[in-house]
Length: 298
Image (cartoon, rainbow, N blue to C red; front, side):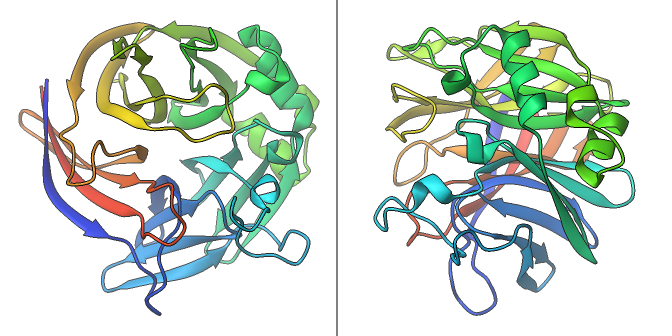
């Protein structure tokens, strides 16, 4: 398996402001919804335009959050974006803090936010993790199930893993038609993606392929916990079949070092592989996130 970067571009809104901390991407209307994990708006990227889409109300009157401003603990931290029936996208918090255990269901006409603490608790229990170890960073839809990925941490002894949840009952919980406590958590899988320089590769996003396999992005980030950022020493794509890692491919580094891909989506199939869009979190609110056009060959 080989991957090449066909195109690199900075993501900016039409007013010139940067798209911050891109953490997910999903099909949305006639374009793509790019999630910002430290803001109350996502970016709707369409041909010739990038416009803001509100995904959550202001938090204590704030629309953006950062370590420098002392407000990082307030950010929504939506780390997974997954297209669901009805031309909608569900955004899921990382679960790394109590304020990050919620979802936003986004449609072109508006959004609905729900607290899902009971579901996050059930996921932590299924994975055998303490609450402060939870760091759910990617999700994709596999049939009628949502496969939700825990970003592991080799230093902390936390494996990369996933659970499956039923899409219909998850959406019912988000819209208020059901209860978060009734969303069944099952099909725990664990993955060994290897390590680079003693830093483990861990899943940052996932996308389902037409043949039922799952492609994930992974980063080797040297951090002691689920909250703090650290240096990224390598990044890769990995092909999963069930809990088996079928193949991996190192992602070429950019001028500033390895690309910390946090969002991945298919943009088209090729005879020998697939083309993808990926979005990269710069870990700097003043620097626009990067959009990569990737070509993956089997």
